[in-house]
Amino acid sequence: MSQIIVDERDISKTDRVYEVLRRRIRELALAPGAPLRKEEIALELGVSRAPVSDAISRLAEEGLIDVFPQHGSFVALIRSSDVRESLFVRTALEVEAMRRLAPVANPQTLAVLDANIAAQVDALAKGNLEHFYDLDEALHAAMFGAIETPRALRLLEAARAPLDRVRRLALPDQGRPEQTLAEHRALVEAIRSGDGEYAAAAMRAHLTMVGRAIELKLPEIEAIHG
Amino acid sequence: MSQIIVDERDISKTDRVYEVLRRRIRELALAPGAPLRKEEIALELGVSRAPVSDAISRLAEEGLIDVFPQHGSFVALIRSSDVRESLFVRTALEVEAMRRLAPVANPQTLAVLDANIAAQVDALAKGNLEHFYDLDEALHAAMFGAIETPRALRLLEAARAPLDRVRRLALPDQGRPEQTLAEHRALVEAIRSGDGEYAAAAMRAHLTMVGRAIELKLPEIEAIHG
DNA sequence: GACCTCAAATTGACATGCTAGTATGGACGT
DNA sequence: ACGTCCATACTAGCATGTCAATTTGAGGTC
Image (cartoon, rainbow over the protein chains, first blue to last red):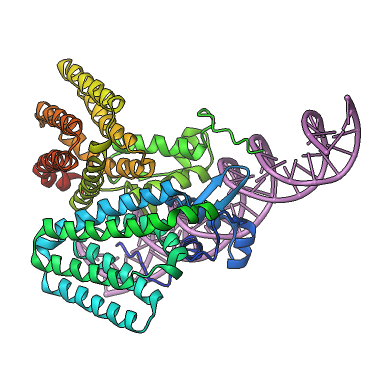
């Protein structure tokens, strides 16, 4: 009898290390270019070097860490080409997802999306930008959840990580959360319309604006962290 | 002075094991559901268990291997949901790639694509279906190469692997290589036109046909290997 | 002072031993 | 015959030791 327990508390050490490092890199607690000393990380997290190595190699595949054999592992620099490619992948996945989602979106899905938008309004009213961006990510994730493509969602999350670092660096003087909210509203309405082409266009428009905001900051960011 | 050599002969053992296992799985030399005994694989390839484990965990992330902790690792079954999701990812990436490629395709790129098509004609004339499909993959890879998105290309290759297994199982009685060739011609011509929207539509049409062919075979394949 | 040389230190890749979780098959009771 | 229980034989995950490649910098040469 198959009795494989997947208790959420029973996460492998590799996964724990992976999550910790990933968050630190995304949140810039680990700066681009910073060296990662396995021994030190292992000691800090109370594990051996093995799970740390595994986690690092996974992050290397996502492009968040550069590994130089027999030399060292470093938090990936922010390269314009990488950022643009991430946006390319994100655009490809999300536009296609919208095209598929709109025609089949049911009331439950729309209710989830509406609730998310309401929460975004609330977060913005309170000036809680961190929470606003968490909701942003949750909104996009909810769309993928609705079309049941868990693997594609994982790819999307991987593609978002490099973009997240740029956003965080550009956060202080980017004054477009209101516009972002408006675009999110438009997205949900486009899904509600049931028109896949229209929804895809709305997503493309949204991500085009994201790309424009990124391009504005990219030169100076890359000058420092690339 | 940075002096990191990337000699192609100096491939890590992990990479070698990864490539070997991946090819065997794609070519069905390792059947869906087959158990993978690390010790045995390590012995056969003349390495230790460590690189085998690393390779397996990478293939697990691609969805080609299912790992059951403390039980075993098995070649992933062919599940309809996985196959459809792979086609979804592939469609998303390739349609978007065409949209970007068409407006910027230069003569050199077009020459490469034309040469590939010519080779496809030749392979088909000789009845060499294996080579024809290699060229198919090379054609799509060339398109991604032209827009310089190496990471996206890697995702595409990962997405193709599950589809490859289905194709190989359906190969005996799928009689549409001529139609595939015609679609490939249309793709290249669409790129030559420079119209991104047109090129994207051509790719979507091509992949829709691929999806249709797959759906025809999926029920019986899944009944056996899923 | 600029350049080269080479040994010490650091690192990732890899080998190998150990632990704990899981399926399996046979003994046993019914 | 049939279901239950438990010893056994697996497994992946993890810990730890080893090795070769690479950087670094001290010391020597011009």
